[in-house]
Image (cartoon, rainbow, N blue to C red; front, side, top):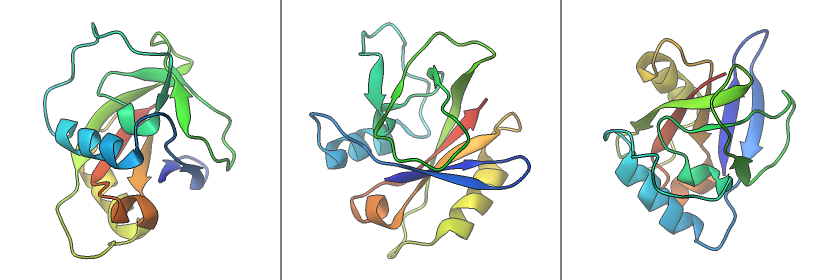
Length: 139
């Protein structure tokens, strides 16, 4: 599970959970490996609906409404002014226990590109499963 923090008039938190055939632990491990590296080639064929743990730098997806809701996947789409785009993946330094939402918000605000308007943050549950990535998103 991750939170999507929407910036603007106020902070709105959108809880996100990963689903699919691959376990969250495997998706989280892959996301952790991808963080901090070069953008993945977009030539590899993927389904349009993907787990939030499968997002890569440069992916664009259909933006949902700015309300609190639980989702497990997003729908990939061509990048446009109506889509959200993954700007960066920030690997979080290893810590013994879950550092909390304020820690992740501070990290995202200081390390995500200036164009970032939203971000996906690890939750206590996803942290326990090994999630160590903040996803920087531009709407």
